[in-house]
Length: 236
Image 1: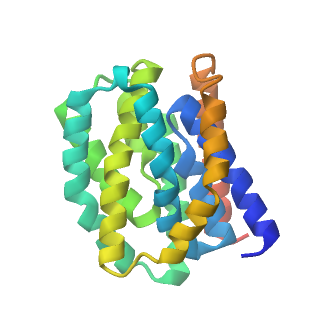
Image 2: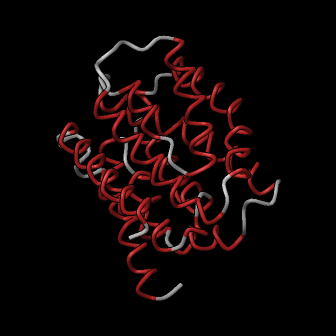
């Protein structure tokens, strides 16, 4: 990886960590398409590994607002669907991974923007967990289904619960990817090398997370995801 590529990736993960630390959404939507453009081989392990310290920090920071009931149902479905995500990854040819990640990113952003308000119940939790298990294991992108479930809940509840669900799911996905040969130690190395950039973004988010306009930040993240996902799909 060239110095320029590393610099772009470092800036991207720092911004993404700031956005997710503040709004509860956005890290994978920002990082996955950029990483796919720079080096498709980074997906999905680099994105999953990079999110672990970020989500650990956010879940701990706002642990008092955690929705344990919702997180339990989501996590159960997410873990059950993880092997399906691995199967998807095995089925997708390497040359088509960028197209798949771009398409998943665009679809997730469109659904997030268009979905109406609703009150989540057990079915919504299970559905969001299952879809997240499939898409996050295969592509690294899994946030929109969880954001849809919690988009009309208090921001602290969204941030803490989404972070906790991600944390468990990311560890499970990485374990399965490495156990089946789809994960490579070099990808963990890049995540570790960029840990300072992630820490900077996460730390900065604590200064503003109570003052951010969550709705505007959400529109920005989803707009960025649409554009970058289209670029990845078109191979520009």
